[in-house]
Structure formats: structure tokens, C-alpha cells
Amino acid sequence: MKNMKKLLIMAVAAAFTLTSCEDFLDSENYTKANTGNFPSLASDLDYELTGAYSVLNQYCNTPLNNPYFIWNLMSDDCNGGGGTGDVEAHAVGHIVQNDDGLYAPAWNATYAGINRTSTIIYSVDAMDWKGQEATRDQLLGEAFFLRGLYYLWGTQLFGDIPAYWQAGVPTPCPQVSAEEVIYPHILADFLSAYKLMNKKTQGDGHATKYAAAAMLARAYMFYEGFYKKAGELKSANLADVELPEQEGVEGALTKAQVVAALEDVIKNGGYSLVDDYRNLWQYTNELTVEDYDFTKGQGLKWAGNGNSEQLFQIQFMNIASWQGNVSMGFVNELSLYSGLRCDDDAAGEIDPARNATYCNGYQNTFPFGQGWGQGTVQATLWDDWSNADPRKKASVLDAQEECDHFVFTTSCSEDAGYYNKKLLPVTTKNSNQADMGSYYTWWSQLQDGYTNTNGNSMQGDHFADLILIRLADVYLMHAELTGDKTYLNKVQERAGVAQTDYSLDVIKNERRYELAFEGLRFNDLRRWSGKNGGASSEAARALERQNGSRVNYTGRWSQMKHATSSWAQRYAETDGFLMIPQSEIDKVGNPEVLKQNAGWDSNATDASIATTPVY
Image (tube, rainbow, N blue to C red; front, side, top):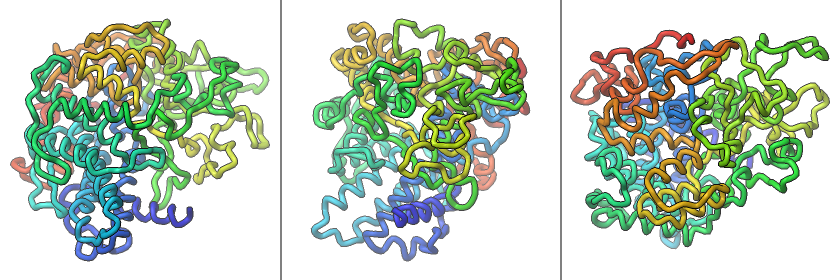
């Protein structure tokens, strides 16, 4: 285990030194190996693959640069939240910026991943794989999978970006069309991964052939919906997608191939829906479940990390630190960011036993712990979501209703009192600590070495997987592509809601509620709207409903308003793409090679905020 951690730390340190596209040209890694002498052995490729996976945690090091969290905040289901000083979170949620380098970590992580995976892909056959052909194919398939994922995230975040598919970065490395150039490569990478990989079971953090099949469908549906404006995919006349030639890819990609890949996952993958929706989320863990009124006495048991429903996830391990070469990305910082906001001067009632104000976290809000209070749930989602759907209260904490002494703090902003249970830190009464005046995250009470390395349970004890794709999503994608209600009904049956016939509206609602806060809603809205959808598109109209919704600001109730213009206008101007870091554009110094996205350039209006909105 110590050697494994050392290998991972070295790979991470190398990955974290990589920055922009051009910076990759002559970069050295942590062990002083370079593209002239590394990789030279098959074992070197294992090291390189470890580094490629570690980029997933690099995205987690700065949650406001994690695609999952970015798209939660940008969607109509979440607010930026946090405190009055959390300008960055509000900028993300309002589709504006407060710093022209706001998204630099996401940009850098994307190209770190692309560089490392391309190195593997174009070095693999320089090695001798005689007698190890299956190992070679699996490794290559994983590299294709990760490269497809990093390009998918990069294009969904930034649109047309610099792109290359060889081992070394070209100079210049020009910005190319995502629609015409990059997406066919993304689809080819996922298809190659699906065809090459022989690993079928999951749980160890590595990609499988079935994860590749699911991601192929996700990328295909976004491509056809957003770029090709296909409308309802069940009945749309979808042209075959011409793919570049590479291993495992032959000819064009058809809708029938994508559906067949999903059916392969469903019929042969060995996955199954977790029996109770609540068992997907860590508040049903063994140290908490019987002390939490919402879950006790019902025979619930957390399905755990790497459970039967997960196809791919970001995993975490106890090596994180605020200092040194290993980042905080190796704990699930999204939980910390999502925790109940707590200030020393909470705007709540006095606790006579402690002669102090009540404080969110610990016994006052058991079993949900404190954090930065970002990504709070939008009041419109709570109002839209029927109380008859058990997933509502399984996914959303109504803090005023459920918690004994929840308070809106004197620094809170964009807080309607609703929080995301899927990410909230979870505490336990079963403490092995001497001081029972505080409750601790349940992870810190385990006996298998999970107690955090940075000396702070609130900040460091978060190890629940960040689930990127699960079987329920596969079922709903299949239903949307085919119009067959079979797997739609399985999702509804597990949820405990009425089973219905297929319709696109049903699919849209099921995706919103089943997959709430899992980083998918924003891009679903985009693909249902189509590129250049404008201020009247489905996405723009959904986002604009945030205007006037109820929020608490510094302990008083108010109404949401846009920081500059309106959500509909900002969506129409940007199409949901982010600002390319200005430092990258300045570094290139040639708009023919790299230029700013629409809605963020010199012609943009109301694209920046200096301070947080005041309500």
C-alpha cells in the first residue's frame, strides 16, 4: 500500500506541474523523465496511466473548477450559495466571472489529462506485449476512455478548444471546431475503449468496457442534441457520424450502435439498481442510519463505494493535504463545499446550556455536517418536485424542517434552506473521540485508517465516491433514444412513483429528479435546446425561473435577482460555455490560433461581477 501511495503521489505531482497546451512541449515530470526517455518500458505506462487517472482528482482540488460542481451551480436546480464573500461561487451560478482566470484550473486539468493519455496511446506499441495482449488492450482502452472523457469535459466547458491527437503537442496548437473535429474524435475514443477493454467488473476506480459504452451514449446524445439540434432523439432522423480511423473503430457511428452498446451494459454488465434509492447515499451508513429519524428502523444499508449501480466514479484516498505536492483533491471536497454553512456569529437563537448561539453542524443539524454552504438547492426545484416522489426528501434536506436547530448565518447568501443530501457531509453519534461535545464525520470513526491526514475532520474526512455515471442514467438514456418504456419503468418502480408510458416530457422529469445534483441537468437542458438556442430556448427559460425565487441573505428573507442582466441573456450570449482563461489567450497572442468565447470577449456586456450580489 505504501508503494501504491508513493506511485500515486509522484504521478499527481507530475500532473499538477502541467499547465497550458503549449507548456506541455518541453515539460519534465516529477522523476525527471521526459518525452525523450519516457515511457520506455511497459511498467512506465502503468505509471503514466496512474497519472492520467490522478487528473480526475486534480479537478476535485478546486471544486469550483470541477465539471460536476460547475454544472450543478450553473443549472436551474442549484444556487451558488456560500457566504457574502464567495464571489466565485456566485459568478459560476450567474454565468459571469469575477476573475479572468476563474476557470484556469479546469483548463489546466483538461490538458494534463489529454497529454498523459495521448502519450500512452502513441507509446503503447513501442513495448513488447507478447503473451500480454489482453493487458495491452485493457491499458490502451482505458487511455482512450480517459482521453475521450477529458475532451468531452473540455468541449462542454469551453466549446471550441485547441486539440491534438498525437504524442507530442504541435506548435501552434490551434483552436478547432468541437462540432466538426473534436466530437467525432471523442466518439471514436469511447468506441475504441469499448471495443478494446476486456475488464468488465468495476469498483477499483478503473474504467471498464461498460463505462465506455455508457459514456459513448452520453457524448453521442449531447452531440446530436446540442450541435445537430436533433430534437426528440427517439424519432429524429440522425445521420451517421463519420469517425476518424483508429484501433477498434471501423466506419461511421450509427444510433443503432449506440443503443446496442447500452443494451450490452444492461444485459451483460452485471449491474443492478440498488434496492432502495436512499441506499445510494452515505447518510445510510452503518454508524448513522439508525440514529437518523429519516432512515432508522427501515432496514436501510448504504450500498457503499463502487456499488452495483455505479459504472464509473472518482475515488478518493487518505493522502490529501493542504500542503506539499499532494492536493486536497484526494478527499471529496465537494462534500466540504456543500456542507451546512456555519459562522461563529450565527444568526440564531441562544443555547442556554452552552451560553452560545446555535451553530450548524454537530448535534444541531445531525446527521449533516458543516462546510462552506455552496451549491444550495434552488427553491423552484423544491416547489416543482412532488412530495409524493420519495426521491425528493431522499435528495434534498429541508434544513428548517428536518434539523433541530438549523440557522441562517449572518454571512449566508443565496440560501433557501434546502441542501443537497447527495453531497452533504454526514456525521455520527458513535464517536470514538473523548470530546462528545462535538459530532464527527462518520468516516473518522472507522477503524480502517480513514481518519484524515490533515488534522481536521470537517475538512478532511470525505471519502464517498463522486459518481459520474450509474445504471439509472443508462436506463433513461436507452428510453430516450428508443422510446421503449421498459427501463424507464424500472427507474420509476425503484423510486416508488407511478410507472408511465414513454414521452419526452416524462424523460425530462425523470432525469431531473432521479439524477438531481449529479452534474447532468445543465447539459441536458443544453442538448434539449440546441446550439444558438437564444433567450427563448428551454435552457434559458429554465434558468430564468431563478429570478424572484426566495432566498435568505444574511439572516433575512429576500428574492433572487441576477448579478448583472438576466440568466436568459447570459445563457443566450454564451450558449453555456465558460470563459477561456485570459492568460492562455494572452500567451498565444494570436486570435487565429486561440480566441475568446462569445459572451466573454470585448463585445460582451454584463459578463463580470466585482462583488457578490446583494439581495
